Image (cartoon, rainbow, N blue to C red; front, side, top):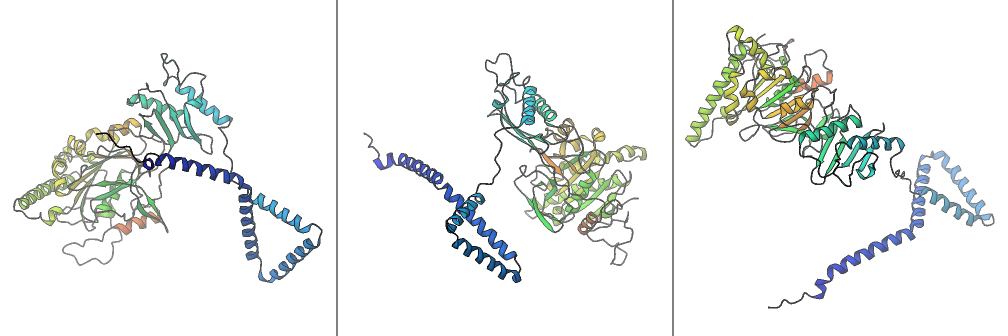
Length: 532
């Protein structure tokens, strides 16, 4: 059957609408060009009137009478002078046209001489990597035009490149990590060292965008974060890295900062965490920050291999089961943690078989925080004890199902001493402190998209949760409040987050904090006592 043609109004309506929009746009542009002088004069009159109102408002009341008399005298004089009103109107229009002019600074058409030389140097440096002899029309050639290769560029106040969009030929092997690393290293060296650059590769469009990242805020102190149970804030990152922000307090001000949130619990795909860094990199600060957040909803057992008393502020606090720092106490605490994990598994299994909800004590989160456990691993054989790393297998393998979370902090030079169970089950990774791209990739399993800076503040590094992207990270300032070098602001911030002291079983309730709460007993359900 023959198809009936569409009505004319339907077949030609879209074309008429498009033509009408073009005519309206052309008419608007023409009217703007014709009425541009009138628009400029109107804008100038408004600015002159606003200036007159400000001048009148700023004049003292005792001087407003003489001012009015002076203005009236000038108006009368102008009115009596031949051609005075006409000259006054012309003067007013000229002043309005001058005041109403467009004052936006005109952007230069292109880079200046110094900037042009920088771009030319970058172009010449990229020629050996983006050109082949077989290319009949190379985009990159010695003595070629860099304008065709660089689509956009920006410079900072020092004259160095801050943003650059580079086009490269389609035959460049941008899918190979080594090829991309060579280009990133070259651009880092030629654009200026000492800054962090972000490289965004558009493999479909054959474009590379280089941008200088601003430094992450280092003035974020420890505080209560607006998170749900099972969410832990590891630190803060770039706004483009995560789709969520948290309201934070900066003294009397409040700002929204994008966080790196680690989710734990039964449904977590990254139930345990490994933090690696050098001395003074901030791994202990990260553990202290995690402990303060974990104590809101669970219990914490701390194994301190360094024995420097960095966790003394948590001793004897509610929810802290123990702080072990000796080669004898650490294995005992971890053996209890393994038995507790098995007990929770059996209790939860029996409850599920009976069709009941698992007991409350099997659902309360239990956190095992280990700071440099390899130090205790070296000392354990001398005392005839067990290596703490071997005692973590049960919590690491089965802890997720019963709310047991393991966090291990270690230094770079001792990573090889960590057991296979720790390296295999800690899918959430953090690298803090100065580290090369190779070290970051070895720990996180993926290279960062930025160039690591040689000098970074404490708590600065990278984080990766499972197979997700690599994020820049800045840990919130959570120092030891008993350290004399701690500022008063940070000391009060940490002390405000500490839970209350747990009185001994045979002692009356404690109404005041002890004068020197260092290495006090930490009673808990397991009877683990901090050693000193």
